[in-house]
Image (cartoon, rainbow, N blue to C red; front, side, top):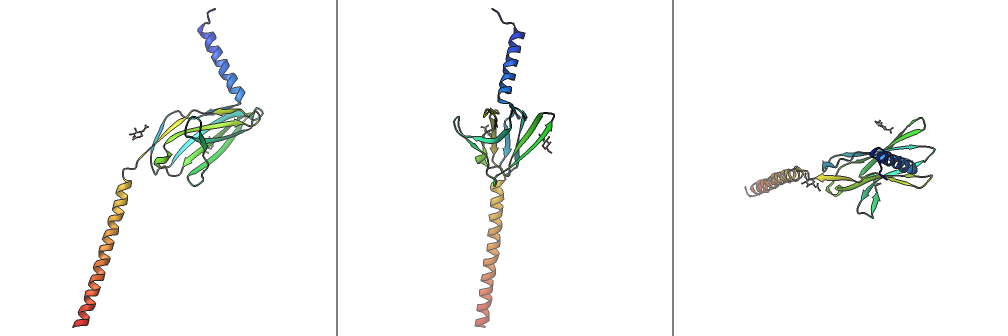
Length: 174
Ligand SMILES: *[C@@H]1O[C@H](CO)[C@@H](O)[C@H](O)[C@H]1NC(C)=O
Ligand SMILES: *[C@@H]1O[C@H](CO)[C@@H](O)[C@H](O)[C@H]1NC(C)=O
């Protein structure tokens, strides 16, 4: 039997809607890889769409270390996490925004937003997002400008002490 393209497309659409209704929650965010400079602030927004009667959800951003290992992101010193939700009829939209307060090279890596439907314990996973953090070209310059200033201050101080000792010696001898 030959399956025509429209039938096939319909089948795929049906399977997809079946899958998303099974997990009860849809996870959406940009697929674009992100590149930003260290020291900058950066936010990732994860949008969840679900129905309250189907599931109540818990969702987080994760740092993906390998296929098997992911760490939930929680450190309040480095990240700001905000959650807000709007309700329209029985449809709910929830945004989970992860903000890196100050990017570091170590933040380079893979990130993913996952949601769990608490009623059914099914998990909806977002795609894996790549974050590249580039070095700040002025970082070294700022540090050497600072140590340069420190050296100048020190020279002035030493010169001041030498002059002072010399002056005192002169006063002693004459
Ligand atoms: C959350 O708040 C932001 C800023 O006020 C708004 O743009 C966004 O639409 C809100 N999202 C939801 C799901 O309510
Ligand atoms: C990260 O960005 C740097 C600077 O733009 C680039 O040289 C490097 O190839 C990027 N790394 C990846 C894995 O894309």
